Image (cartoon, rainbow, N blue to C red; front, side, top):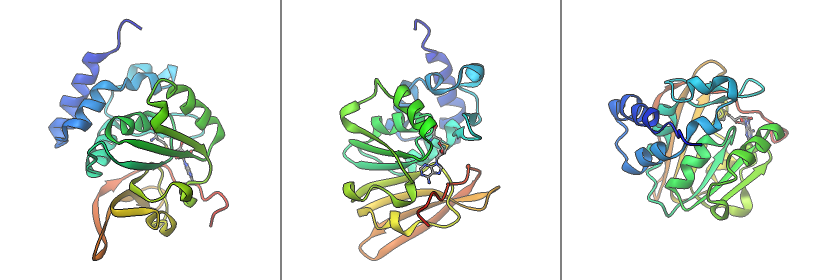
Amino acid sequence: MIDSRRFEREQMVNAQLQARGIVDKNVINAMLKIERHRFVPAEFQSLAYADRPIPLTEGQTISQPYIVGFMCQALNLSGKEKVLEIGTGSGYQTAILTCLAHEVFSIEIREELAQLARKNLASYASDRLHLRVSDGWLGWPEEAPFDAIILSASPPEIPQILLKQLGISGRFIAPVGGKDEQVLVFIESTPQGMKRTNLMSVTFVPMRTGGAL
Ligand code: SAH
């Protein structure tokens, strides 16, 4: 494609991210680099860089750019980490994470979306990226511990199984709560135990319980 819509990404980064306090250079560079429109369904192409979530199939959404930037910045990634993402969806945030961490493991529960993500992510860091169709409530125990865990769907409460898969100084971020409104919870594993911070109110799609609970 000749027009990679770079100008729109620059505007997105300036107006939606930097103006609202996203300062992590690696996050900014990743969001300038990853072509969000390639993850957005054909009928929403004109909204690919808009300040809003974008519908996918089955009532799911690609998160708003600011929220992706905010959550990724909160994880404070240096490029060496092993990250677990729950809710691959379109694969947009997964692609961002491949720029920020060393290895990315991403779980999607819906077969159709997992296939879409596989297609969308075909050209991204395939040796450092691992996709799986399964129930994210269980995490990815064979690959634990993770340096960071990020949830793109909202559980009613923090899944303890996932916290157990965090390594030393591990960071966890998830929208936790009811159907219509949740709080973005950040948890850091410290030598003194898990330290929890509530960051802000958000609205995510609910996390499916699968059969795990
Ligand atoms: N970050 C994604 C947005 C995904 S929307 C993007 O950038 O496109 C939330 C996703 O979580 C949906 O694809 C949904 O199917 C998935 N999901 C919901 N419950 C899940 C579960 N229990 N395990 C794994 N994925 C789940």
